[in-house]
Amino acid sequence: MTFDLTLPEGTYLVRLARRTIEASFTRKKIDLSDAPPKTREVCGVFVTLNTLRSGEKQLRGCIGYPYPIKPLVEAVNDVAEAAAFEDPRFPRLTQRELGEVVVEVSVLTPPEKVKAEKPEQLPTLIKVGVDGLIAKRGGRSGLLLPQVAPEWGWDAEEFLSQTCVKAGLPPDSWLLPGTEVSKFQAIIFAESSPGGDVVRGELQG
Image (tube, rainbow, N blue to C red; front, side):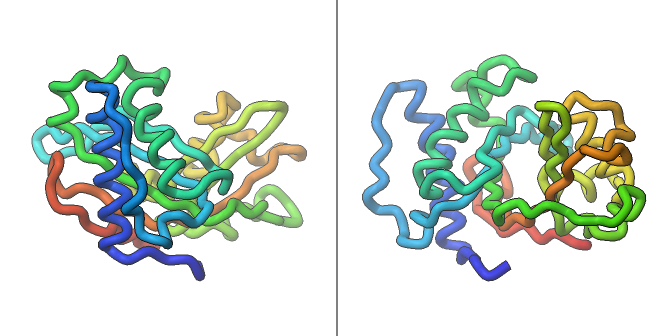
């Protein structure tokens, strides 16, 4: 990964995501004029909201742009609000709940198709804890971020299967000819507590 972000730059993006959600409750406009130059690079990005309960994270919303289509600051502005209010798996986030969630921003490298001579070889080309996955087949698509597999203790085969499930496909769809699997990496920054210090996520392969 050649593109990188410093902790202050990542902190800006995480704070921006929280400010965007806060502003949506009062309909204030967010000023992006103070954005660091590197946060204006065009990248894919996801904003994840997690509720902390008894020290364990529980997903509360996650939306993003898999592909680089907008400058980071604009993309974070978009997807932070979407993660809070438009994730179909959850009800709209309330203002009270915002004080109970930690905000996480994952900046993505452009996805690259995983090329294997046979589908059975795909797991050998995926680094769990480093790669995120996208599975596509028949108009369906599913994405899982790199941090998901280590959090659930999945190996590469299970990661592939769960990415297919995320796409609404049978788990073994990655073994079928015509299923496209792409991988990407992520730079992750997250609050250590709701509204608290921002730390860089360390993925382990």
